[in-house]
Length: 384
Image (cartoon, rainbow, N blue to C red):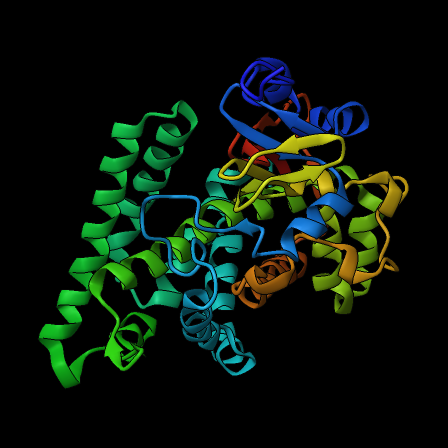
């Protein structure tokens, strides 16, 4: 049987999309390496995923014809660009940004209704991710609404696999960022001292970054922020609402918040998968995969592997942090992890300070996000 003839599953089927996490758990048990009609190989197990992440020579990140800095690069090119990106997420920069992040969180939490039902995604999770990204980059308030609409269009195009729409959405985003670069160049010495201005001063191999490279860096940051952080806030809120004992534990011991958010997002991943490309023939499990094939690293499954975590739904703060692949591992470990942890800790601190309980809304059912998204699109909660 050839590669193209054996199709194991359809990751976009209604059955899978009805409950992605449950579907991945089932696949992990019966078909740990699966080939789909979309030409991708999906890896479900923790050990196989770890082996892929730690072997960037065999499993390349260069999976797209479009420039992706530094996510879609391999060493040595990846190395020099990653050194630039890492400078934006140092402990010093996180400490300097925390007051602005906290002010945004406090203002949004203060607007939540204290009686009746709140639609948590629209009223807190999504605007929090949007406002924080604009603040981190130094973008004006006027860009918030275009970015909100852009996020929706980007998700619709990706969900539909509409290549033309995806290209149009990418060009739209490029225009927003190039406008911000032009504003700062025109301002010269009077340009705001923010991350966007700082990117204009960066060099690689003795030359300035091109606008295309800057736009690619910022696009990767923004997609991660607007999509993944919003999903993370919703997942955590839903978990705390439905696990009041954990919520109370964290209210009483806020020192463990960052560790706790890592564990909740291990249980329910905010990011489903990333792609790699095989550079030579490989064998994963009992499957022989040729060179040049796309391999999907399924975070949402690997982080629930029973052989590593036992009961994957059990919330525990004594697990080995190295086993949690929430932010990846190896040379492509998420550079924005310090910012993500800061944001999630701050939004929970502000929520806990202003409320006594986060509860499910009576009679309301959350709407689950569809692949490639995760979490919820609608999340009715009661805040009091």
